[in-house]
Amino acid sequence: MFDYYRKNRTRKIHLFSVLSFALIIFIVTFSDNLISNFSSSHSIAFVSKSSSQQPLKSTFIQKPIFSKKKETHIIKEEELDDHVNLVPPFNLTVEQRISWFKKNLSKFPILKSSRLSRQFNNRVNDFLNLRNCRVTFFMTWISPANTFSKREFFALETLFKSHPKGCLIILSRTLDTPRGSKILNPLIESGYNVISVTPELSFLFNRTPAETWYAELKTGNKDPGEIPLAQNLSNLIRLAVLYKYGGVYIDTDFIILKDFSNLRNSIGAQSVSTNGNWTRLNNAVLIFDRKHPLLYKFMEEFALTFDGNKWGQNGPYLVSRVVERLTEKNKYNFTVLPPISFYPVDWVRIPGFFMKLNTRTHSRWIDAKLLQLSGKTYGVHLWNKQSSNMKIEKGSIIGRLISDHCLFCKDIYNS
Image 1 (cartoon, rainbow, N blue to C red):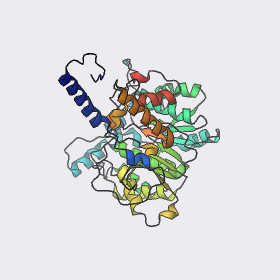
Image 2 (image 1 turned 120 degrees about the vertical axis):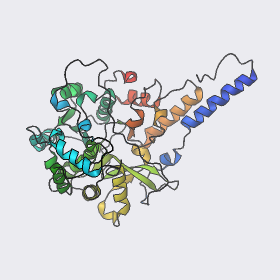
Image 3 (image 1 turned 180 degrees about the vertical axis):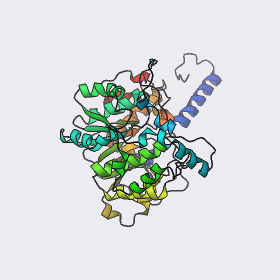
Image 4 (image 1 turned 90 degrees about the horizontal axis):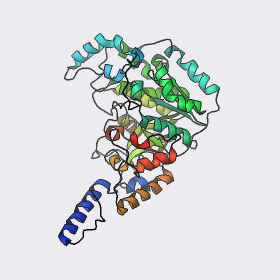
């Protein structure tokens, strides 16, 4: 469609129209307005967030099945979709929503204690004690196992390509099953350190600021809000697991490019102002020591200000407002990394990273971007809400990044 090298150049007006149209499309889609993000390669100063910035978009979605072949067997009870079960009907009043929540509380597996969940701490410690982990990673997966797709698996491949001696613990009831084991087996059989463990939320939140909040939730007397409670639980689980064990939390919609072992007590800025000061932080990557005081502050804020009706209130917005309010920042010993570290492209422009136009100009733009990413970027957030249904085109930035950083590299362009 955008072929700048058509042989029929006899009509100057037609040529001018084609070139003009292609140029407009290129500018609109791929205009590089990320200069301020890429230019800040140092730790970012603490300033108030801008009120004019664009709101974040939710990345909580239901993903397609891992294999495109139709599944004919019945999904077992332990693989039911928690985030569907945890969504109340729309247009309820607060009182009606609490009533609905209390009535259906017993149906929510993630809130239940089980034989597997009660072994959580022992299984995590056994896994870590038997391995010399160069970096310990945590992920959460609350959706059913059959929605853990190739995209998520590429995140695991790139993690271990960059960290062959790393360890990954996925907190997931649905992946801690025979089906989940089958998904992870290619990595395990290749010698990589990965395990799925059913979390025991009562243990994770015990002796943290979230303990009372969770106890109240389990009585059914707290409004879960309109946003899937599983999403908000994931926001809290990541804080609690780092507080208990220390390490790196990272979302499953990342392509990891570089070793994290030189990072400690860090959080990434999603956006910066023109003078390089951060305007929004994000909780998709958190790197903290065990019992770090900032994690405690984050959990404290979660319990005090929980609102299940506002997307981001208990996640990205939470970490931003806590850090902004800190008066003695030095005593917390942490670093805000610039957007190029984890968010080199924002959710508005991420579709451009999946596309490849057959033009010399666009090819040069891709080469320039890849050169930038090879410098200070540890990983690229894929913003699944915007990109999950996009095909990875051959020669695109995402296609080339996965090709360069995958382990098995199967069906990259069919994911």
